[in-house]
Image (cartoon, rainbow over all chains, first blue to last red; front, side):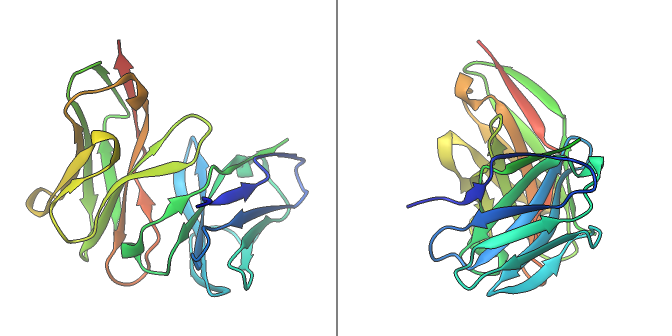
Length: 114
Length: 114
């Protein structure tokens, strides 16, 4: 059974550019969440999508956005990149929305903004 | 507010010694609690979870944790450390009702000394 797939694994972007990251959840999983991991702030929740709808959003500026497609694949977009956006972005999939289902994480996309 | 505190950002143990990683939580509603492990340049792997069933939870790789409501703790233990246990460990909390995003602790880096 394939796990959570995140592409690309590594990205280097320039300040002011935008970037799109992709996440394919485990087959049958309908909930996708995104987290940002940095040395300074640790792991922080960005947003959760379920059935193509954003269910929950963390405390991030509007430059961070996402969407989910009918096949449950999700993308997140960061516009007008800042140096502080350099981070490991992790995607987690879950069978459904609800904490008791548990979360399976992908290997992440490491974004470097220069 | 809901949060977790991991005591000790770095823990060193000898191979074969007991591993004890501490996690205390704060939650105004019944919590779900998780321990994840992260190896270098990897995502998060679920070790175990507490979802209000048995208070002693057994996970993968010989790890277990006990939910103690009176102490608001969910410490992770393993009787005998292996070299392969060297990694970073994260405790996380979410809720049985309402939003179900994870709140992570700041992590504990475990070093195993041969």
